[in-house]
Length: 436
Ligand code: SAH
Ligand code: SF4
Ligand code: F3S
Image (cartoon, rainbow, N blue to C red; front, side):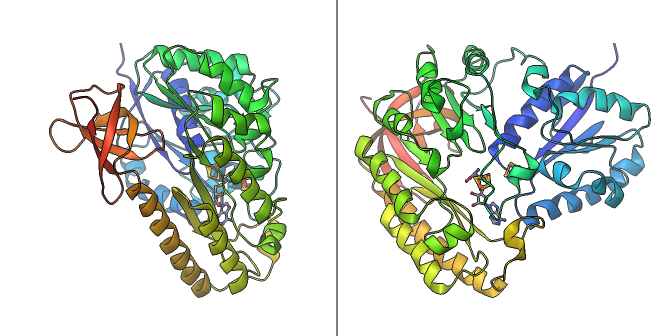
């Protein structure tokens, strides 16, 4: 028997790329590849890339530059680029970095094994189609190996919203939902392999329509799976938060009280120019309805500062919205010009102004985040343990609200325990088992 070939995958970008990397590794398993954690001993290097901001794409090219020496020492080494940069740049990648053997867009992963075979014959392989056949139907069944207590599961892909700043509709294509029976089969399989918590993924996951009851219908169906303890989903668009989904946050026992609901900005003028098709007020109303059914829900958001033509007054409106919501966590970015998107053509805000606004925005967000975290002290939560902590006898897991919690316990990975929060430290909580 020949020794297995080694595959090194480096993943950038969003959780969907994490899921895709797993699926690609599994597909390459069928070609005799096992995964390795370093590029140095790999027979194939695959970068699963992100195109969302300028820096993300540049990182890919500098990373590729770093592999020159490896490729020179081992001419048989295959180098591939997958993900959203692959989709956006296509052949251009091979022109800029001729040592790249393979470029595969996010909708063509099921073709990766045959593409790899082509590179073994000394040819280049490029596929950035949006093929008719769905990749999920063609990807090989997932192997039965045991796995950790949490998993991502992609249920929806692509985006039809065309926010004026965003490349995702171009890199991931139109919105597609996987049929719920397939999703449920994959979920049951994950649970059999040890998974206790599933995060449903989609670029617009709450626009999911693979179930008659939409995303809420799928969540209720997942709620019936024995052994599955927790359900989360991300990322949602404010306009797709329908009544059934909001109600599920009040009624569905396994749906966790945490929601990532990006708003991007608080000024209606900017929201309009972003083509978000919601206002600050309509966003706040969604939050209000969520809090009415689930008062303790933790909210998280995405923000962009320095969108073209954003004034200080517009920026202040974003700060006001943040004060009105109180976020448990958040991601914030300086607007990054993406060629081919409408906002790239508009008058730009200076880099210095963007830096200044980002600093002020992040100061407010971290203050809120810390306050909400501190308010957890004295409360009881359920913690699903994910890994041992740094101190002996300690485990780390997540609360319902996605806080990391450190606990001294003999509980194993994958077990859930009732924990009283005793302290709030920089980025996590400490707690002790209840009833011990
Ligand atoms: N589908 C999701 C997430 C899309 S990308 C949504 O609708 O929210 C994740 C985040 O990246 C976005 O929410 C936005 O805040 C940020 N982002 C996207 N394009 C950007 C750009 N050109 N510049 C800066 N941030 C951007
Ligand atoms: Fe991008 Fe907007 Fe679609 Fe989100 S909803 S992926 S920000 S275009
Ligand atoms: Fe990046 Fe593509 Fe995800 S651009 S954020 S990897 S959808």
